[in-house]
Image (cartoon, rainbow, N blue to C red; front, side, top):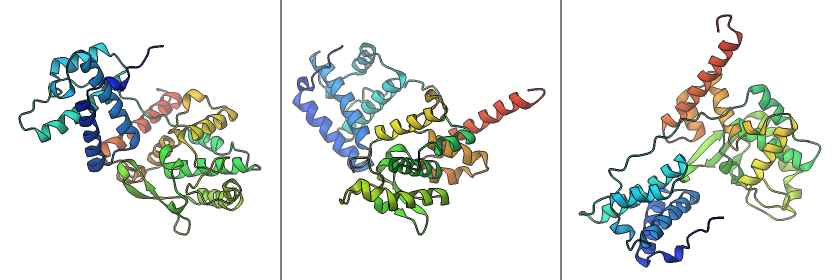
Length: 305
């Protein structure tokens, strides 16, 4: 196995500069911890590589950045994330130094392949939602989580991080904190509300074991669940009802929520608000998913398809 380069070889000036950059973008943009940590790793890797060649981040030239990409091949998405970190870092340096020449300005951005979100058919969703054994505590919890995610289109991270206080059952809404720390109100359907009410009355108190954890959904240990835990239970229930796990992703219920709403005539702007997308262009990809579904339906059933 390839040994990772130790960050201790990074010049102290680079270490301070990276820390200042991360502090700045956190305070200005409210980026998620996962994004900040990815930026840190990418910048520390570049700083280490430059240090081995007698240079530092501040003095890097366009040729150095290009050579680094060539020396460190990676998947297109990883390269794109890496370049995003570099561009934002050098823009940060340029803001403080008027004469600074940004070495990333003329570097071509990788062309990202357009991948459409994977959505399950409505009958498959019905099977998946019915998969948990509601005669058990964990089955009641899983059913409530699946129903809520499909009913409200939450991200996996939003679902597992929901605090108990986020739910207003009387009004039938959730206050969800999404990307960038932005709050939005999301409606919850009647079926999901009923499942959550059952979970809160019969299951959560037993999982909490007399404590008062903040999370709405709890693990067997009485703690908030993780994304990995939820991903594991989705796969387990999908296998139970014969859904190929290769067709399942952590966001499959969110993607299905969006696609099915569009199929039933939902407005794109309303869908943007429900999903918490900052840009309408991000939401528009679901129109392509819906069109692809219509094409398949036409090819399968039309005599001239």
